[in-house]
Image (tube, rainbow, N blue to C red):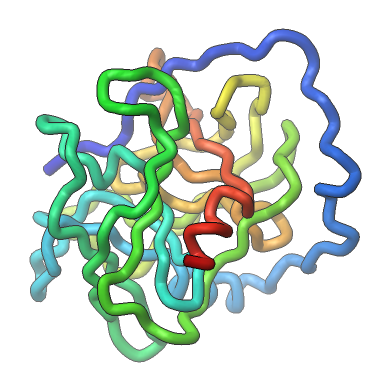
Length: 243
């Protein structure tokens, strides 16, 4: 089984972080959901990413990571390394995303439509990918992307499918933590632990909006209680969803 916690080198940005443009700050934010509604929302919007259509108890052998729905027809955002073959550097085919409809699990066959990493062999970029369903659904619940950047000290949570049990459980697990630092290029450091299977999970702020995509752990001290996420904004996916 492929391990999805990846070593991520951090590059410190010079100078102080500039405050966000006033136009980018929302005038009103949604209040936090009560725990029972939050759990239901995440069960329906966080998906299991797999390299085959899971059959019965086969989840453990085919699951490769997590992702989350970002459009009413079923677009999924995940970590780039989750859906790229580490030996060939090419997209995996097929790719499936499993979501819970409230009554049953639905398996969606996906294709890769956008990568935010550089070309093969190049460094840089963000470890984020966007998947599109081959057979689009209608009125799919989805998570909204925050237009406000995170700041150190923000409370966040992530939800995904850890590969640390004897079998993969088909509902997402939730972990809570804080933003430890935002002073690194294309990275947000989180004060919580990343484990295999959580790669591609949404990092969600106190207003139920996604601020980043979980991608791994720092290159050193891989057993530390820190994780690394790639920031995401509405502009990253707006054109893809419109098309």
